[in-house]
Amino acid sequence: MPAWCADYLTREQAQQALFPQAERFIDASIELNPAQQDRISKLSGVKQRWNRQQIWRAERAGGLLGWFVIDEVVGKHEFVTYAAGLSPEGHVVGIEILTYRETYGFQVRDAQWRAAFRDKTARDRFKLGDDIPLLTGATLSCRNVANGVKRLLALQQVVLARVE
Image (cartoon, rainbow, N blue to C red):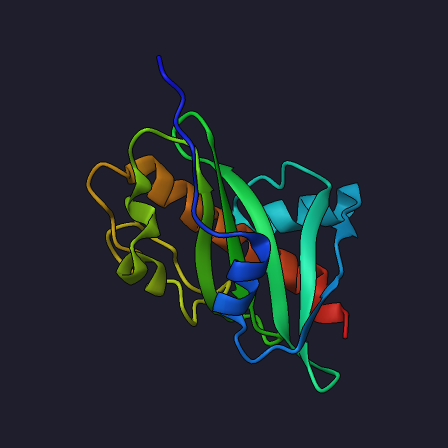
């Protein structure tokens, strides 16, 4: 079976798309301890698989605009690399698909679908077909990206809300 991979955005392009007003992005990647991983999993209902998370502080005039996070989830068989912008208050600023490695399901790149995440918080349901649209032919990618964003919002509560 032939392999498929499409790179849509670089990290820098996604940073500018999610935080266009930012003057700089400062690497703030973290190592999660087992207690933090467990807390994130319990809050989100989604397993925190790795202990390292790629995060950047988006800043303007020395002030925090939000957090830029790169994450990966499995589409159906392969990883989908995406980025989420999170506000300091724990709202989704937006999401961008960086790399898609599946032969189908790429509809998750659709701007209208990604816009459904805007302003979501950890208190939202993230239910496919309800507050998150379900895309025909991309069911698993939709579900897994939605679960990933929900997990990142839990990470924001557990770790990032305590960092300024």
